Length: 394
Image (cartoon, rainbow, N blue to C red; front, side, top):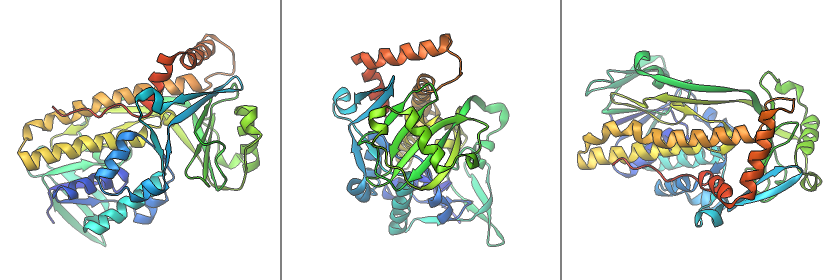
């Protein structure tokens, strides 16, 4: 087999990149080690930046999102049993976010790829990139008991944190930055109406809580829990009772509870790998970086990588601009580190790090009091939350 761009990973990053390239006449093949059903079963993010919404529209997979997604022009911060609204649209000149689940995005992208005849190879094991520092890289993988070879011009590593792409970069050329947080998020998904029309990020002495949603009838809630906590120890009843304690009493009284569709605990960490390129391999999304979910940046940051790589490939194939290839990693990393900063800052401000009242907890209280009482502070949150502008390759 031969293609122009070989994409490792059929999550939303790989699928979005493939869809954008196909619409520009750039041939690509996606190779994924899991089944399509498994990819669709992942319960992940659901808050989309303005830039990602625009990119999905450019990819031609926006119809259902525009019909069923929930545009949000604000978000709330809760502390001291009160709520402060961050007017996203008013503070950013009209930018908003869209609440639309990652599972739905993935389904839309899969259907879009099928409609365009794009090639996707699922359940491909032992995927390995080769000759990345030459003009003729290729992938090998096992499928149906046979080993296959896929020759290509470039390789896009969209296979997540545990994938093979980043591991294909020699360790002496890779620098990794990491911060692991001493807690995780216990998430519960339920077919209950959302608590309010907008998300609530709650700081509380018992720990952080987030009230989110996937649709007008499906809610997603999170609780900060110790990193060694076990999901089996949390019954639905215990979860709902703890959530009520951590959110303001006026909204807690209106909380509609119900049986969970899914419960899981996600560890929190910040991670960046530099560079995001090695020869003709380009890393995108979780393969290159992880952010705590507090700033709703993980999926959106992957989309900004895809935007950069897509526009680079268009320049290369349509204009012969191979001189721009070395710009990929520094261009992506400018935005990556700004998103890492925002996610770290939101995590530091809203989570409980110790049970004792100390200097750090007083600083947290002062920080959230300041940013919520200052227009400049609220604008800082708003412009980061809706998404900073995409960086240019030139």
